[in-house]
Image (cartoon, rainbow, N blue to C red; front, side):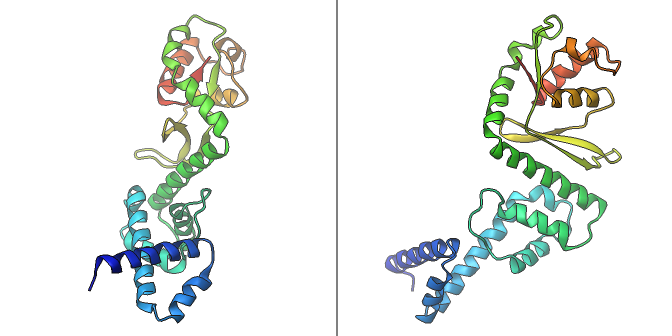
Length: 243
């Protein structure tokens, strides 16, 4: 019979075992087994696996669209990959996506979905490692509206490329395989497919901020009007900012 006292005792057990397993102190759980608490340990492990399964299903709902047997794959991953201690550099869902990439041959669609997900994780990892640069750019990006009117007339306006960016190659709906640029925009990750006009401009900005006047000296014949329109569009998305 479940009583308030029994429920509190079990909750305390969960806390103790969670802390012990996260710290790698498996001997404490083994001691519990030796004391005849096998049923409680089994219940704890079942609950832990259920929580992991639920989180993976929830957080990877987009990726699941590419797999008819996604639930079975999650189950296989959970059986092969024990829970590890909390690691801010690599979450359980990131380990699952990496496992999925290596577990079996993927279809073209599945590879694209996996590549898309991994690119998003790579952007998030960059934002953590280069936090100061990330915050500085995001602060500048929030002020783009105050500079847009200067694009056509101020030769000193400098254009900055988002420093938190990752290239990936995948086939978007209705397109052949192409290079896609993923980048951080506020609290989300978005993407862009630079075309023939834009890609050389992105490559120049990747070397450092520049003005439109400075870019006009590059060897690619692009009109100023095209660059202004391009900058307006990408500034709205979070790829570039101004100062």
